[in-house]
Length: 307
Image (cartoon, rainbow, N blue to C red; front, side, top):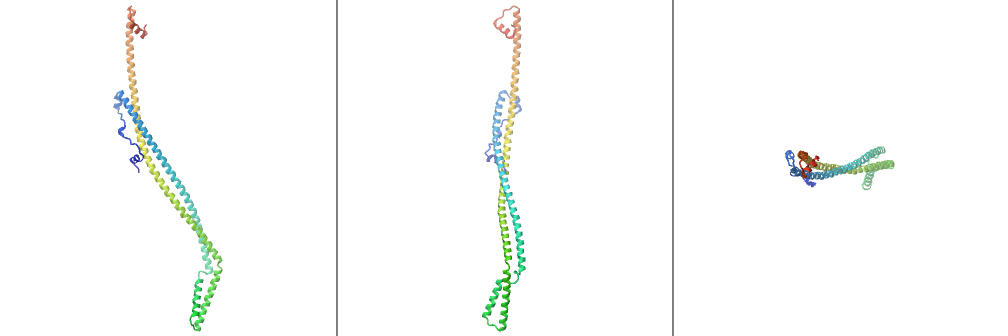
């Protein structure tokens, strides 16, 4: 199982240093000055952007790994399909081989039955009989025998010659047997060819099976790496989101401070207008009483709309 550290090293992933993250406490938010908050907002924004960039790079590498995983799965599927196709051919040749072997067995059974009918399998072979006759004739020619032994030897030779003639006659009548043997051997040969194809195709099917297993194994390994890369992406994205949330909180606090300052300025302006109005009313009262007003007093009356 691959580790996060191995993925970081293998794919040259920039590690996330927690020390570079920017913290924002409630005390900072509630009691920090406007200048301090503006500075903190800048730090949060910059770190957020760095983390978003980091998350984007990790997501890209994760997507690349997922794509490689799919490629390996597709490769494994191709090997699976080729294996299955070859196995179908193997089964076809097996069926044909078995069918031919069964046919050959039936033919060879017929051969044996025919041999038994012709009695070719019983007694001595033609070669054995010919050899025995040759030995007996040689003995007749080279040994000095009395009349009785001579007669017995001649009878043996004649007997074996009769058997030899019978055997040869039967063999001469075995053209049907020869044809049957030839047919059986041809069928057996064809069955052997199918068996050879079974072996060849089965070996190829096994190769594709092994390649399929290897491709699936590689896909699993790459998927594990992609999962770890996703965890690294989530780590960076969550940190970026937290910095963004804190940035938004600071911005909201700054708007509150701006609003408070504006309200305070408005109160000051209202108070000043009220003071100016009271002063203008006093000047106007003096004007009505006949006092002479200078230019400044006249301008104050005009400003308040009393003149």
